[in-house]
Amino acid sequence: MRASDFAYLDADVPIALAHRGGTAHPANLGIENTLAAFQHAVDLGFRYLETDVHATRDGELVAFHDVSLDRVTDRDGLIKERSWAEVSQARIGGREPIPRLVDLLEAFPQARLNIDVKDDTAMAPTIDVVRAHDALDRVCLASFSGRRLRALRAEFGDALAVSAGQVGTVLMRFTPDLISRLIHTPAPVLQIPGRHRLRGREVDIVTPGLVRRAHALGKQIHVWFHPWAPQDDAEMHRLLDLGVDGLVVDDLETLRRVYAERGHPLP
Image (cartoon, rainbow, N blue to C red):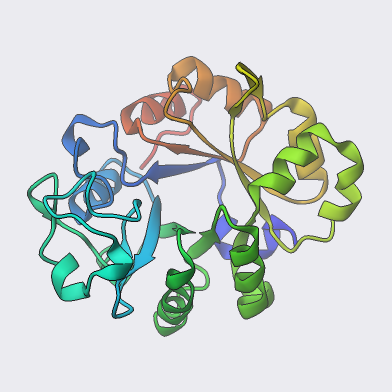
């Protein structure tokens, strides 16, 4: 499938995605993946929001990155072992509740969501929520698991934008003979890091050749940043100069500034 076949990917300029609501902005420090963080991103002009999903023990789908509550909330334990009643009492950064995916869909009806399905237990609830909210044109589903991605593609067919698995995308960078296999993937977008650490050194994953190959197949490239990778003006300009189709960023203000400098101010 080609990116032009999907309403989600229809954008006049490279897509600006707020990663977990924009975790590097001072207003959002410590409250990633919360309604407050996403509201701040929307107020800054971001119309694409990136989040992750897990399912509670009783099947409620929450927008949350980690498998457990320990790192960012005042509670502990694995989400899939806690009921929604328990999870709903946790507070991110000690003050913000954990939202459900339905809360994001309803709170930001004009926004489009990139959703990383983090666990097998979240598969069925994700499918149910997307169908129940008629959100096929508003979401792109992603996962580090190729098996989950294949199952999502089988479930939704050509109706929903789903990203390609990272292994296949990275191999496309290093192994040109895989292009013929990737031509047949239904995924219209490749979501990958700009750089990768390989045997102690940093390797550029996104290169002019990769961008050309992806565009020749009608696919988009969205780049996200490892915590150790630079996320500054120069790196964002470099990637946009290469022709990437979207950036998934924590630093919302820097991306706003870069877009304005390039003549594409966020609304």
